[in-house]
Length: 407
Image (cartoon, rainbow, N blue to C red; front, side):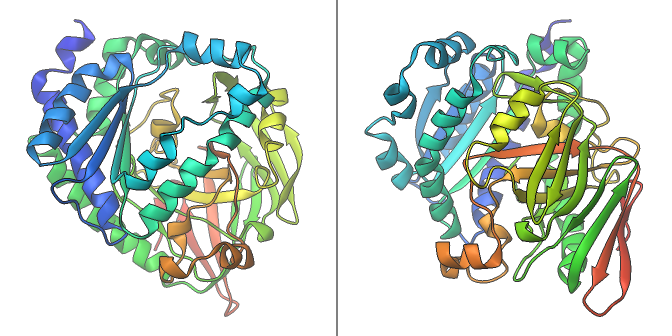
């Protein structure tokens, strides 16, 4: 059976409906609402064309102005980093800032035909291009904080993803369908119900006056300070699927060792067994079983790249994902036997600020320990673990153990 028969017209229509729910939920989470005439950008890759076409029609029917563009191919990406000079690497199209200043929504359809095509490219070139595109991310972030912009993304199965995950393409497609509840009659209702259940966990976490968290597993022994004026986030519609509950801690209070036992593909490179040692909030030692040189260069991208930007937990009762999928979107949400914890090195999420987003100036972000970087890289730990909250009152509360939230 071919993949196109698994992703039937009905399944694709459900997927599009869930993505539109995600886009609307994401904007609603910051106080915004979509209206006719808003501009929504669909970015897609070749194997997601059919989904892009369906989304395009549905958004037009909602009265949106829709921009649709296909992303660069792996060959284009390789040639760019291989041939481009420094000025070309730093180049931003003259219209790009104007677009982002007016954009109300972004839906990114991921369907990679290669995951390792940049393994021979100097990662400093990749870093330079990432840093150069940071102004666009800043524009989008500010518009999101004021409720003027929302975004979401998803993934379609490809031969390359299936190969790297050691599955057939048919089985890989079935995993996506299961994870997004596309085999159910009304997946949008399921997502909305899950969001409500997650709200109870977030409320309990946000009600704790925490001094620091201690994360302990076989290979991880890490202390993380949540920081002042923080809140826990999750199930906001930004990623489809997403089962994580996360926050952006005060990077300055990170101490100890974090180990990522799940492999990771990033910027056309493969890494495995990443071990980071933090001292005074910064990574002071980088080790990896595979791709260590690449990891070190990524964490040297800018000043904030070696600092903590995110702390996240996924409960196995929430997530039906049970297999390695060779893509962070799914892997950071794996349920499995013990759920998962992941950290991200690099940029923080400003919506983890518990106050009025309009108050969150650059100066205040710095004072509160929100991290700033062109990098945001999720590194996942699926080991059996226990997470203890040490409260400012002196009490200890186990908040997560063996893949389950305990509060």
